Image (cartoon, rainbow, N blue to C red):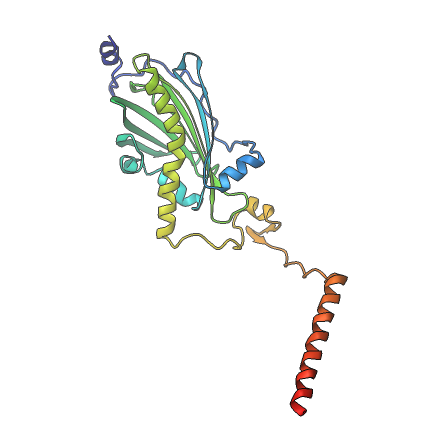
Length: 282
């Protein structure tokens, strides 16, 4: 029975999708995701912060992952947009092909990609319309509803911005809301959604950091911030598209106890030198 339903809903580039979208698309703007002190500690350790909700019936849900990456946003985007390389970079992705790539009047870019995913004996083929805004540093996607996909629906979101405090690094946000057809077993849905959440930012981290290393690695930790947000977070002032950092503060005045200790050390040193000189004369 499952095979019959699957055959009826088999992906087909020559047929329209069974709906025009059932999940709410993401808005193409930076999201303000509140992070606790514990979350920041997790990110600083190199691990992602993950949250996930499952829809009623267990057939999909919205997932969220935040990851700090030791690579620049430019390099991170170069990996996310390299769809043709996904089969070698992303575990479970078997095939990809870009069948449309165009620039839009608002400066954004639309990329339509056929993807084929294989996991636990289940193969899913689907067609995705990605919209990338370099200005907003955001990429959103929906299904390409002019083509029939094996998914009921899929909408998602990438945002890669400069790390708020660490120069040359990236804070990456990934979110997805997917709905699966009834013929996909529930355990496969759970595996795909949870794995997608943990793997999505993980593969970007690995590939972006490899590319960053090829380009000479990261700037030093005390390098001047290159973005307005990072500049302000570091206590600088953003002027003429550059960060003006304040001069380092003068060393703190020594405490009275420290002064007394220094004077005692000096007195002992003078006494020792004098004693040595007396012995030398005698």
